[in-house]
Image 1 (cartoon, one colour):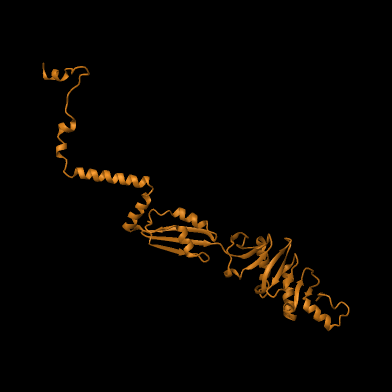
Image 2 (spheres, helix red, strand yellow; image 1 turned 180 degrees about the vertical axis):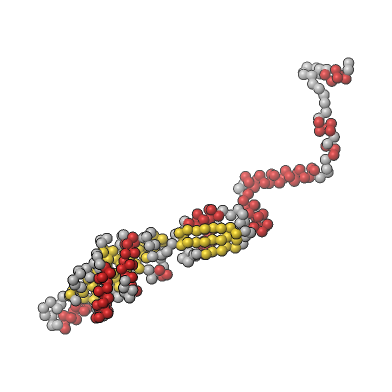
Length: 292
């Protein structure tokens, strides 16, 4: 029997097969592997295992942030511009920057969305300036007036959109407009008052009456009833009378300008009583309203 026939000979019950050495053994490569290959393979396997565990555990970004920050790409400075009403701390809080946050992995788009959700922000931009700076530009909504309906007071913009209900003394110089719908027509009364700038600082509030016309309340308590039309002309006439006779400094509670051909003044109770005494209570001298 030749050697080849011996190798092909059946072994009991089963399939005959060719007896050969494994390729790796026949080639002799195993004997030539470096001594450190086993350690390297173990370290590589351990690294892959740890990396897989980090990813599965949701810690991949944290580790990557830490490595990138250590390499000099951490967020170390934030440049803010454009903010006046918003506190800087609120902006930093919305950015969600933590210790070890890297600039490379920082979610600028998400930060911009969070900033744009803030009450005062009209538009925000977030820019990365490598290696370690964030540049934030804020365009704020402009406060235009205070709007009161019932017990609620809000800051509104020129269009009448509510900016915020967080009102404090910083906004005391804004005109207070009162009643539903007044916030949408605030520009109307602002424009009228702009024609009499000497009166504007004395106006405490403007009341929209039946969605048709305005009543002004002055800081000394006097109410000025304005007409539906020709408001600017009525205010001009009022200031003319005040200049001539000091009308707005008198002891009165209301001035009615609704009629174009006359001005009606309502006196206070004390002034009406004093006038009654001075005139001896004769005729209509005790009336609380008179034409001027």
